[in-house]
Image (tube, rainbow over all chains, first blue to last red):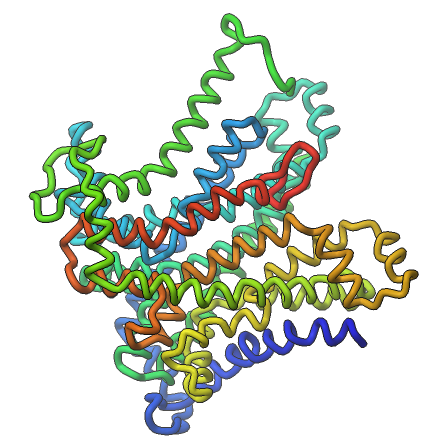
Length: 288
Length: 284
């Protein structure tokens, strides 16, 4: 009884602030709503418009390109850093904190900092490149390098991934590692046959979580560093488009339909990842 | 692998290389923040340099006074602290209570609750923006900083509930049973036995949720209209909209807004990185 009461705020909050809004979002997608007049039922009109919308197509392509570049980079970064910082000495602890630090910097501050770093003439990044005789790209005024810039600035914020990788690497059974060392395989063999299978579930979960996260996390960079999705729609990612549609054009119903499409695309990507991982996992099991 | 090899001859080469790599990685992750601090100390209005300056040539500390005069950062910071002062304790109470229940109930129910929490953790925030905005608008909570506290009523994030549940379930059962035999109800066991034992997680969740509310940008962006209710992150956007090319002052603003969380994180390190005996939440 008392236990139920102690759980109540959490469950009520989840229902009211997460589950219900998530469901209401679907309902909203079938309406025309500008937040001033009451919503009007619009049937499938919003979804039909999504299919014909060029900006939606661009935003989807941008988001997918971003996922394909950013997620592997972030996972590889987190994993390699975790390998490097696995055994805790005093120095390693300090560096772990340093690696985590960019993750806790407020998004708005991080975006402003990168707006400065990426300044093509005065920014420290291109000036550093110039020291090596490299002419840096124009970053946020060029479509291709603008996309890369967003990927770049997000690959600093990998603290969560670092924590997950550290925790799972530390849980690899010690005796299995010792056994492999006695068997005299190369470091790569040990990694492939012992470490990787042990951490695969955690890595897979991290992959899913980071994919979902990455679909939405480029909103503030697109808003500030891309100045609202620019240059020329290059950083118009799906969340940016949802925001513009809802709060710029006051088309909440249509924005909800785009959100639904974004759900679907995220689900599709997760499903592809899951299939690929299972296949890769099976091949692995047989190779033993 | 042996923990420490003798440092002589070729044998020490891997250790030196490892240390070098560790140092390079540490520096690489800190460099954006260093660049921001360096840029915040340049005289505003002076032409930016065309070549790299690794050490700032000027120390214009006056920028930090000026940025508070340009926009009302004092008020924005007070607003942010107001939100955090309500939201952080509320988060700890709600999340730890729920986590305690999760750790005490039968396995069948526990699995269900954990699955529900993970599922809710996976819901993209973007999907919730619009309905929540409409919900808050209907409830008359637009443009009040109080609206920003509301997620704390559900413990802010299912992740915190899971963290608490995990910490409480690592406490040996007989500790709870002993308290129960003394006639303590669940509420007293939670407050007097479980919470004190999980102090590192309490600290960690306090830090994480403070960082969450301090950093929060999208929620204030959607819900707050007037400057008197704005939080620090949103205030930074006001500064940016005033003068988009005054880099020294923009970087000063960025440094001002990031300083509290950075300092808090560094001070609370011990809660995240455990000592040799294996406490803390990040792992050893």
